[in-house]
Image (cartoon, rainbow, N blue to C red; front, side, top):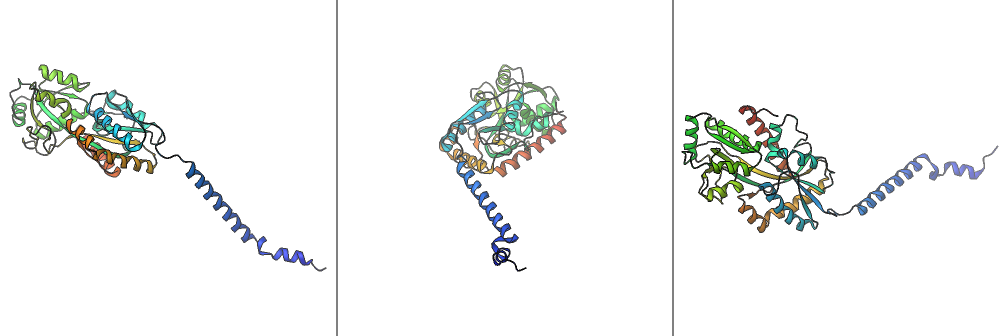
Length: 342
């Protein structure tokens, strides 16, 4: 029996071959995928599209809060949306930092981290409920400030070298106050470099520590220049030096610790802007570009200068490298000084 001609043509028609059907399906799927991608791109709102929260895990009025507010006001201008500072103080900055780590990684929650929350807390907390490296993506370093080293006027030392000699002659007799673990480790490093011992007196903040230094309840205090130098300028305490490698422009009369003989001593208080890990790279880059402009702004630089702070813009990679190096450094200092994590 002869096959119908139309049936023969149908079996041989390339439009009905398996390979043709596979190619057709592939082109259809590609078209659908591209269409969905384009639709998503069109639907994705531009960042930022609503107010941004900047968490500061410390009380108002401190140097970290001052830096945060200076940056937030200018950042709002650069981004075209308000940036609201949210102070969440307590426990060396841990609660506020945890709140930022657990926030949605969408660019609408930022963290003003500092030497304590991102640098020294891993060395002093046995079970820190966040990881400065794994839980955050760095945006940029913001500012660095020296610590001022000051004594009560009754202390018979007019220079850092004289203070070191006095401490060596009376191990454990001099008391030093600290407002936070980062300051404690900074003093412990000073003690180690100089081979001295001073008795540690912890405080919950700079204000009570400074009050006790002025009142003579403690002998020595290391504290950020923005909080302690006004007391030096007023003549209430005696400033002996600063902790950084270079002198502070706001206090040029104070020598560096290295100039006074404390070789290799170089410690800064610092702040950095970070976001929750997983924040999309384009948002991190958008924030980085805006922060760079903020730190170049004359108004920002002048405000920083009044606090004894220097702008420290960096790339996200540089900020991440710096934070990791600080964590390692302070863990080593804590271990060598016998400071056990709590």
